[in-house]
Every structure is written in structure tokens, then in C-alpha cells.
Length: 118
Image (cartoon, rainbow, N blue to C red; front, top):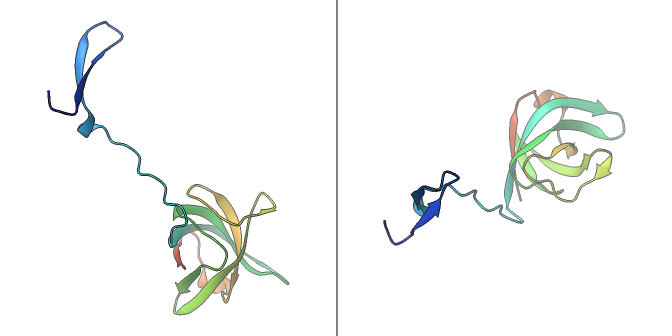
């Protein structure tokens, strides 16, 4: 047994050795990360608001003001909503809709991954 090993008793009462190095631990979530990825599920065009992609955050965090490059156009997140409530931060796994400044519906398609940065 190595320096980081420990002995545990299982439910059968037998001893076993666990090596802590072999246990996969989840990576800590980075707060205030500088980038995030968004997967588009559907795209809507709402008069007076603009283009609204709906989908989920795949990695990182998203905040209003972040920018992305879509087919050579720089687009900016104007606002984000989840369940009809405004968001200031969206984390991995959140399903939301966002208002994009500078985008057209033709620039977005389903299953597209958009990488936003500050």
C-alpha cells in the first residue's frame, strides 16, 4: 500500500485497499470564467427583441456582454432568460434563451455550438 492508500471495510466485513490516486474526482467549477460554450436547440426571431437562440450551456459560464464570432460577425449576449426570469450568470447544464445583438436567424442552426468569450 502506498503513502496515499487507506484500508476500508466493505459491507461483507472484508478489508480492501483503496488507492486515492485512482479515484476520479470531479473538476471544480471555475467561477467567473472567461469563456463558455452554448449548444443551440432552436432559434426564434421575435419582433422588437431580435434573434433568440434557445439551448443549454455546455461548458464554462455565460454572462451578458460576452461576445462570439458567428460566420465572421461579432455577436454579443444582450440578455438571458430561464423560465421567464432574467439571468446574470448561466452555468453548465442551464437551459435558457438569450437575446443576441448583431445576429440574424440565418447565422444560427440547430445543434450548433457557440463559444463565447469576454
